[in-house]
Length: 155
Image 1 (cartoon, rainbow, N blue to C red):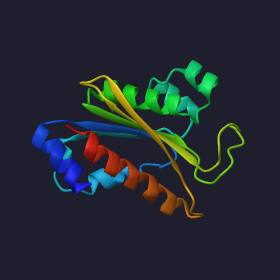
Image 2: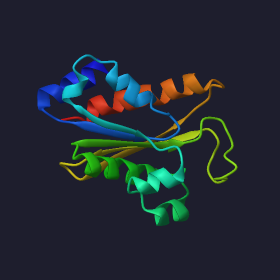
Image 3: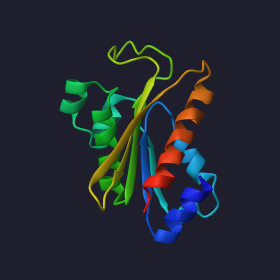
């Protein structure tokens, strides 16, 4: 993550995060890097659909595709970028090897990630299949995947 933060600082770019199942793990990883305050604007943990919607996610997209979808991750990434006027927004939603009785659709071990580049108005999307039984290890797996992708995306 230090390389990502250093790259953002060098390019004078900013980033914000709206994460759900990772519960702030990505924001924590960013804020563990010295100097991150120059680039990190905001981190929101929107565990419930209610707060995803309050942060701007279209409820029709949640209803049409399920909260566990790349479509919702894209909305999350774009909305957090808009809300904070950040160059990059990241949206994370999914399940970490757990059934959600309130949202039954979607695989119980798949996490959806979207990185939104405001300048290009472009989404970079991918999913991560979590395999470990430990929630902490699964969060770390997702964060590592995001960090790798972010470094390649930031220009």
